[in-house]
Image (cartoon, rainbow, N blue to C red; front, side):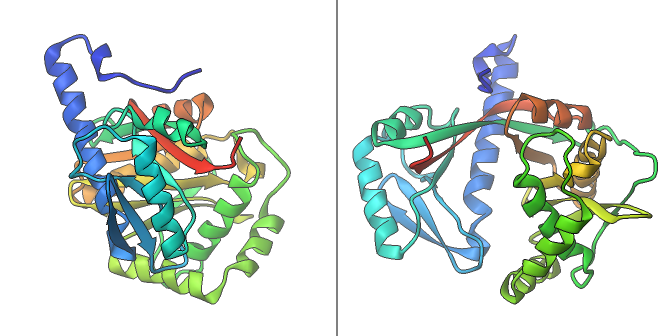
Length: 287
């Protein structure tokens, strides 16, 4: 199944223009979001974000470039990555730079694609899950770190299927979080760069978490993760909706996110998100 969404599938010219404008706005957000934590290095057709934090970042097409990107541009980027001691990793919005997928493949990179989805305030559908409480966590709340641990467990057990990993694995992952990462997470929360919402039950504590990162009129909802033992209860959809609602309440106009496959797309659709495009990620040696 392809997750691509073409603006030309709109039924009217006005609808296509609206989608195109939204995708352009999202693309500008993706350029702005890494800048508080990274040095932006211009490398020909690309902007390389060199992290100053425990996170690793990536390169993306420069907002200022207007020529088609070719494999020779990727050669320059790879050299810059080696110079700065970072891995070659490229992310982009397909509708903005459709030629980059073939250029990346020609250069020998492996490409992944994910559905790009968005929701405005009137599209989000609030949801409740029996026995589950959703709340925004404060910077000094230990639930903030539990959310990071849940992401490690959940993404290590991919998909949406129910599985055995649960609170024991969460607590083990929590113990592995470095002091540097813990401080970075708290710093971003204190500065308003990241807002985290957790889902809790009375018996198990935090069983799911997610965040959003606001930048101007746009915020990305990301790292929505549920312990495999707590899946298939509607928690991820409820969490995604709560994150989007909180972002909209803080002045964000559009919440965006990416979905790795059709099953995850359906989860986010239940929260009110709709597909508006495709995002790609390319790295060496993933095939």
